Image: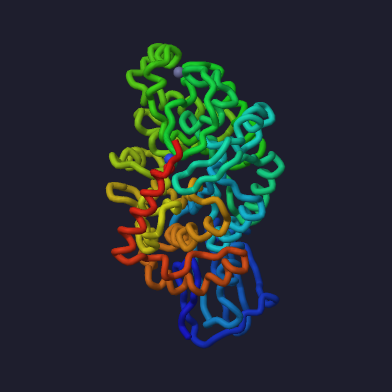
Length: 469
Ligand code: ACM
Ligand code: ZN
């Protein structure tokens, strides 16, 4: 036997000949300053296992590899380190929410394949799910919607819930034990209907609106002209900073229609005062003001790629590319900025396998055309949005194997990746997911036939039209 079945595929394996028994009680661990922070060397031969890592984190990664090697392994030296420093997944707990125990299972799965970021989408039009002690109305009023009408998925009755500071801290601590950083997302200025429901005075019109019951992009966004908007946003961010120690905080910035800003005297005044010639420039101004606030607290900022449209995004922000036809993210990266890749047609896990087959996710190279310097792409992230996912089994079906494929892309050098071999190894790795309590999509669903690709994708999109109205 001269094969190891590990996900992510280690970057260098030297087979020494013969086999060895892996008895964890014989594991010798050492930290070496010669190795990088995420780099480890694992030697298994003659019944002895030696794990050398550049840090405790690297030792943890070596142990994840060891866990997948079973009881008997070929004798080997594994010299391993990641292709990208950022390897993440995003969980939307707004459209549907998941318990702390379920969330921990996702974290366990991520840790087992050496992912190191959980991006937690906590606020949106359909609910505000992060309790703020400075602004308790945000969840008291904004965490409940009257019903749910997501295409074919309709649920009568109120839907609500939020995470207390203690619960969020529990997730932060659980992640930290697994060397995963939690980056919370408070999405502004768009996707703020739930917040505006609680604080109507910080929208342009000042009118009360409902917490949304359907998916969509809504015109009512935070007013960039009113100072009170920033008071509320900074208060909520201040509370998040007390809970989340991450270097980066995500402030969204996606899908913010400019209709209200064009008509709003406060926003227009702000533009005149700051010499801004378009509402997109006003969004850059808005974003940079929050970036400055976070910087004053020692933090940096993540934004979705729409934040680039205004042209003057602070270079310290990291851009999360998801849908960037005009390739503003590439320009940003080529001019000293940093980006992570969450490309919609490859990495969004909420779309059916018929639209995004597993091999399409797996084969995608996140260092996209036009990028001059690989280092400007800090990594990859697989988002799962949950409009059409209202239970944990469905969440797991949509996310696995896709999260795992993105994890392998984040860790394994492109030259060491192989789609067929990944799919073979995933079948073996499934036993670890099952131990965690996760059931992935079965192999026959991963790469649908040409006919299924058309019919099932049409069926999915036709479902989105099934609104009550
Ligand atoms: C997004 O999918 N609106 C970032
Ligand atoms: Zn306004």
